[in-house]
Image 1 (cartoon, one colour):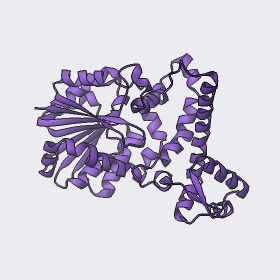
Image 2 (cartoon, one colour):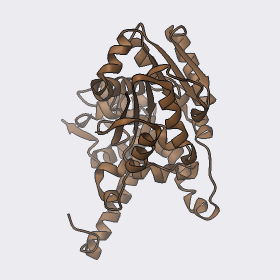
Image 3 (cartoon, helix red, strand yellow):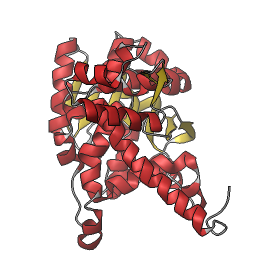
Image 4 (spheres, helix red, strand yellow):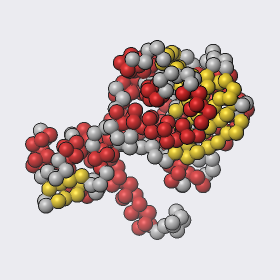
Length: 354
């Protein structure tokens, strides 16, 4: 791959043009999700004309025809006998919201929430204004009413990425063990674990009520898990537990925790875990070195850091996280890259208390 120093002016201009095209593709996709175009095409695998698609969605036919052409340009659609059909795998990725790899909600959030916020970053650069994750969650419909793919993703993460690496915790849960979920949000991982381990009990803590604990309580009641899942509003570093849990989970929330309380958090987690016990921390993969900023493995973390910087997000490097874990007392700290997440590559830290 050519370095930035060897790119010609025309090569650099072409790369910028591709980024502009990608920006528009995001809006084409979001319109297709919001307008129900992908859902209708998935329901008609033999294809629809633009006119038929407009009729089934109650939309303006000339504009729908232009959308179809644009979606075809981005290889989201193909044609068969003059009718539009979804390109391979687009049904799983953009139609419906049940598949664990679905990105439909990500594109909706990109235009509804991230886009307007990113447009203000030039102002943030001057003001240094810092917002709030909690406030943003309260406005996010996917936190108030999580789409089915989020539960499917949590289930897959546990079964394919976490469970195989913690056989001792798996055995404990099959025998009535206990797990603490730090930053549990709407409680989706807790629900999956309660279903998978019918004799185990679970505790979730968070500081976010709207879009977090309120949603969790409602879902827990609806699933009939009131007797085995308890959630409460507790700051992570003030957890009162001692030698209580067989395992602690922190799932895709560590980067949101203020830097000055990350070390106290890990110390509190260490106190809360029995021997033998384990901590699992899943979060965005973020570079340790400048060179890693250009490695695709870390781009999801780099991109998330920029999107969320006005919320006060500071992504930890692996070296920083490893140091905090070992200073808290954990041993045999492992890092595993997790690639099959719609938001991009994450890493899973597995740290033991022995």
